[in-house]
Image (cartoon, rainbow over the protein chains, first blue to last red):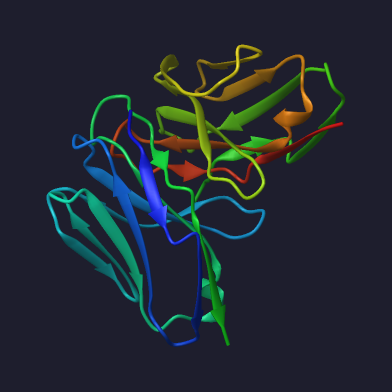
Length: 113
Length: 113
């Protein structure tokens, strides 16, 4: 089955700096890659997703890049703000069929004001 | 917009008791997923349903069972509870299966004493 590795497990950045979180996946058949943000004690919330037919997607301060050949994808947050502090999970699944999302272990991002 | 509704929000049970968690997906969503999240861990996939039929099975213990009803709501039944079952249980729904964004409920925090 799919295995998703996520790095780093913790990340501290100064407010206004950029943050990058990287994930690798094992199943070359996976082609849907969402990112979720989870604040303490709350539900995971989808912040951005990318499919294998594109290499990059951007939404304001958030961008995701995908390298299908290398089987890795990354989340980039620019101009970080204290409210960006949370745990971020990457995930992977196939774009069809019954396969559920497999999550990475998460990255705890702390933005220091 | 309507979101995924889970009940109860909190549940305290003793060892060997049973518990039932309920999930009401977003209207028109045909797929329901159950995830278990321990403290500081990533969500672990338990089981999913598509159009009221079991779709995929993850790390769900034999002591647990689930079903999806004709109105698309789902219930997770947990028997012979163990201390290790204490966790946040999330239900998520999507329109379609693989490759569709998952929308999570606020979760049920189960504490087994």
